[in-house]
Image (cartoon, rainbow over all chains, first blue to last red):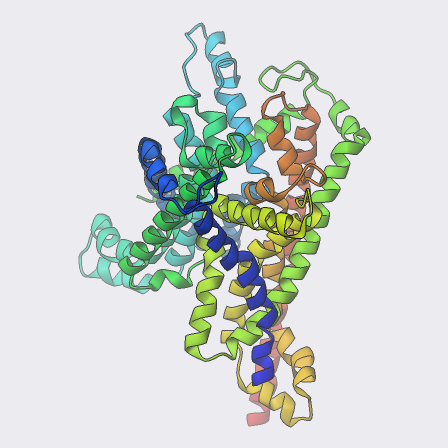
Amino acid sequence: MKTRKLLAAPYIVWMCIFTVIPLGIVVYYAFTDSITGALTLSNITGIASYTGIFLKSIWLALISCAICLIIGFPTAHFIATRPKESTQKLLYMLIMLPMCISFLLRTLAWVALLDDTGIINNAIRLLGMKPLPLVRNNGAVVLGMVYNYLPYMILPLYSVIVKIDHRLVEAAEDLGANHGQVFRHVILPLSVPGIISGFTMVFVPAVSTFYISQKLGSSGTTLIGDVIESQFKTAYNPNLGAAMSLVLMIMVFACVAIMNRFSDGEAEVIM
Amino acid sequence: MKRLNRFITIIVLIFLYVPMIVLAVASFNTGSDIAIWEGFTLHQYAELFRDANLLRLLLNSLIISVLASLIATMLGTMASLGIFSMRSRMRRLVMTVTDIPMTNPEIVTGVSLALLFAFAGTFLKIKSILGFFTLLIAHVTFNLPYVILSVMPKLAQMDGDLRDAAMDLGCTPRQAFFKVLIHEIMPGIISGALMSFTMSLDDFVISYFVSGSGFITLPVEIYSYTKKPLQPKIYALFTLLFIVILLVMVAMNLLQMKDAKKRVQARRAFRGRTGRAGV
């Protein structure tokens, strides 16, 4: 038995060096000065001026989550209730397939669609109407987030709904529940773990994105991810960047912990 | 209710595939502006295979994905076996660490690794440490949890007596693993490896922070196109990639279905035999 445990040793060493220690370095950078290297709180207090950006990132990510849930739930339900297993598999694959293509390119394709001289506006001009301001605003950023992360909502929802015992639905109907009541009292409560897992799987990448906001947004839609990226790649203040990463990380882990508590740990199994 | 669900599903599928169609159509366009259709051509596809630089980047991406997923699958499968035989407290601790890269925003993982490598660079006095190995290490790191999370459930489902039975029949623990256990957990290992491979191939955020100018992958190069317009041959490249992935997925599904049918038949045959024996 002892030798079997040793099999995990390389992994544990690897994770210590490349996951735990790097996070320690992030904490170290967050609390030291960029020039003198002395301990300081100025990076953390410096974040205060970015409060608006933090709130905006959270707000846009929450809206995206909500939209993903609203359109993702019916889709997942539809797929999960197909009588033939092969139809279910086909639809599942169709939802997953776009994720295999670089999200950078798919986002660029949206820019091509929505741009002022893009495909949609060209069509509108052909009809003799005024072009619409479709890109470089909050709406376009939310659209980009929903587009990129919608499969992350649908897939866990599907795997929960497909496991719901259909006899429960029939029992509720026999007892006189209408469609709305069946949904509210049977299907919805039983899909809570899927909702929670989908919600976190959409929220985490959405709140920390930087590519989507750069391509589909404008200077007014700078998000946390953009600020962190610029601290490491252009402005070069890794200490401030580390402090912001630390805050972002704590925020995400707190959010996940609350969510898990919400579902009494049921969400753990779903992937 | 049902009709509404169907309607929304159709809308969602259209929504998901519109940009893909735009990319595919753009790859056949004679003009370079993605939004203006000028005429049909296969020129971009010919261009693509003449562009040594682009092909090298694709090769880089493939090398990193294959190596990273192989290493992660090996380390991860070993680790799963080890973790599985741990006592619950230790196991919970290791699984918490496993969850960190899964839950952490990619940008934080990227930044933390970039800081680690910068630190190691100054410590080892290497000027530009970012390159092939930092990229490979980062990819293995974010692939490991996927392998563990797909192998562990298979270990849990496995009948614990199998190992004992194999050893009673004279296997050493090593033989028991390679002759019996590995076949039981193979589906988990394969799905972990495939997931790692696709995650690696498509990864941009983490690669962006840990790659230097010496060795970059395709997604990192595409990102650098933000300033200049994208070359249409990239659309051709991704249209081809999409078709390859589609074919692989269809083939895998067909194989699975065949396999499932065979298993049902085998079970029936087995039942028939035992039934007769009972008589």
